[in-house]
Length: 317
Image (cartoon, rainbow, N blue to C red; front, side, top):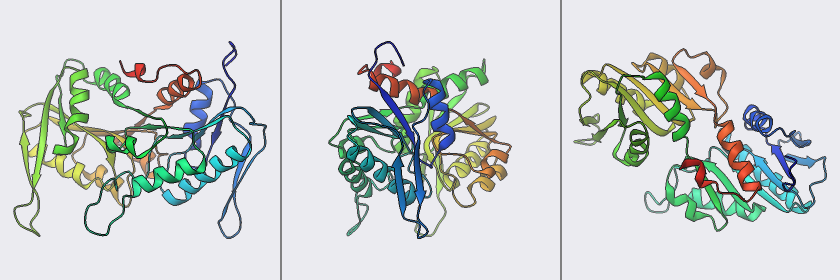
């Protein structure tokens, strides 16, 4: 960093090494020498091989699959840093696992997103840096500062370069994602459409009503998480049936569990664009209609600004 900036260190967990390396190379910093290992019974052991006393340390660890292992790695690394007298530890969590359990959905159910927030704070994080949280209120689950970054600028740049002169329509796959879709539509001055799903009777398949004019238009579905990809693929089918010219999707977090990749490949989706907040599996890399774009520069810029006590929100103005 030079130029009299406070010292800063980056530590990578095992969850997404390629992203951590890309962030480190953007910042021209080496990753701190640390070992995060397993004992033979799979307990996690962390040892940091460099002095971190008084340092500003950033731990890069999305808590994607296997969520519990990756979460424990993060917690144990934060504990090691606190006990080594780091000045501040920031948990950099590009994908925040357990985010979908953010309210009580029935009697006697947990709010796991809040539990995880407590664990991260208790383990010694001084602040948190994350990307496209599933719901805004999770920011309030933390009593430490949290910066929630947005993939929208990265997506917008990509859309503008690929849809020149096409006037695409941005589509929210459900009513809950309208604000997210509108943010991108506004940036590219595009129209917005919404898919309204309803089940008339239990056990019947969902009816999809499309609100907005999509006939003969290139449609771009926007969402924060694609997991089983069922909703996304059904939405693509519904849009094509209603006369869309083509359907693509831009989704921040490619969870893509189970048979999701096969589902996307077999669907009418021209392309699914995801970020590298979660490391892509071999299946993702081989799929001909899935493309990963990097959020490394965005995360790195936010880390640099956090370390320099500069504004992070101005990244999005």
